[in-house]
Length: 523
Image (cartoon, rainbow, N blue to C red):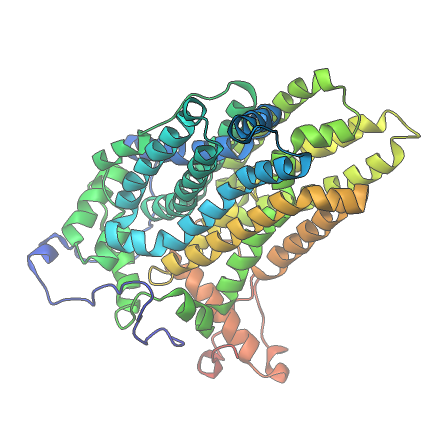
């Protein structure tokens, strides 16, 4: 398929080719045609989802927002420490730069973590990578916890970078793990659960001053590894069967095992691909482009500017300083409600409506902030429109764009390409996170109220791309989704005079098989 049959080289470690029947294969089940690969929410499935969401996603949300309110205290600590060391305080410029480094180093750590995902999940598995990453939280907590006692701003920056490293790993591995253990009819619900905890973490940072959440992922060793990883990459049919029994709560896992075997057979001549091979593989070009667009759009939508600089934005729109903490607390509550709505509706309405509606709402509200800022001098009540638009951006984001891109990354690729896809999506996500967090204050100074129109354009363009290109993946297996894109490539490679004779369904798949032999890969 494309160029993925070449050796992985310095890329990701390759998975073993199918081996002859072994004692492990004694757990294999006889095929039963026509089965429906669905399942119900069991206690182990819910437990492991809540555990990884609480121990990783909630920490990510907390660290996104935790530097917003105490900004002046952090700057005062840096200034006092500098004065003790050198006998004079920091000038405003260097002090602002040092604080900006403290904020943005989190994203740089996340970028490094996302680049390590492929190696970690191949070496230790999904569960193992998450369990081991919990040690980073302990290390980061030690650095930041003792920074004041030792009078060291450097320890705050180092600790925050390590926290970013942990978040970079977990932000990719958690949806990868949940996407692989969940039955197809629950994949959306479980996949958006971490988003709800991200919103909860932001809310806790805004209101409660969340206590340390250390070591929770260490409990993951009590749960099985991803059954898809065990069967497809480790050829451990017995282990995969036992994991499915526990996660699905039923002894009848025959249909799921057969679906995994079918995917494994389709990948039998293919090694795990590296990032470079993924980018060169024509057979997954549309999937790769789609992951890049939704992950970059997720951060370039302006949500990081809202989270990092909420207080500054509210000051600029004229909210009294004494009311800003309560306004911020209200936005946190809206985040949780919107995230909960997304979790409860995704399996009914699908992925596309949530992400398209979310980006459109964010785009409209970004334009609304610009209009309200321009008019609030003449119309004082427009400041409340600005607040409503900020709330609309947060609600639109948490309802769909906050979690669906990570879920789509798992759904659009088969096992051989999935780790590399998460590296690409995660790297773009963190790069854009860093870019927006670092340049927004300067963009705001130079463009004023019009800076939000940049975010408006990004949101509307991403919504249009999803509407035109990305199919609905609700209640479909990974192989079915792969076939949808394969059919689309076949349609796009058919001569134009033949396309007019073909009837297509809503996602570009052929309803007729008369051109089965004429398809070829995209150029």
